[in-house]
Length: 235
Image (cartoon, rainbow, N blue to C red; front, side, top):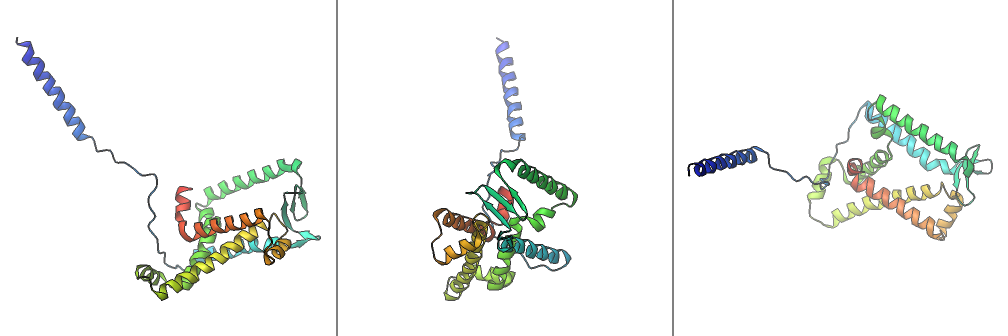
């Protein structure tokens, strides 16, 4: 009969120890994979690095927007002619059987990116990444239309009236024009851009050309205008 109370006491002590261990463990916190974006209002900065970034933006955008218009020996200097299966890069002409060399070139470019990023920190992300470059341009338009940081914050907090609608409409119109021009230029690397320009003026672009102009333009408008740092965090 004396064994029963001993067993009960031992079970009670074990239950007490288990309860203490459970209480000592921190509660599990459910972590979300995606956090809702809180809009950031960056200040305009000045200095050496800001000037270097501005110079990088101008050079890279100049190359992107102007390169398809450069003539070269009776054709476009850089043209990826998919229907003819020819890739023109100035004097070089790549055929499908030359894909090995293109792959090698891309591998070398990737290793160069890794090397410079390791050597100079966030050199790519801060100065040359397309997300950074186009975001800088969209932010510049935003500052010119809506004002500095405090003015933008006050505008977003203000009720919707005729002035706010007008300012927002001007900003998004400029954003949309730049985004569409970006999409048009992108397609101009795969379709002779002078022919594409004539088609665009006549509103006679093909279905795939129209799709990629709108798709790339919409992606530019969304990524540089709204998502911004979210692209770097989640993509």
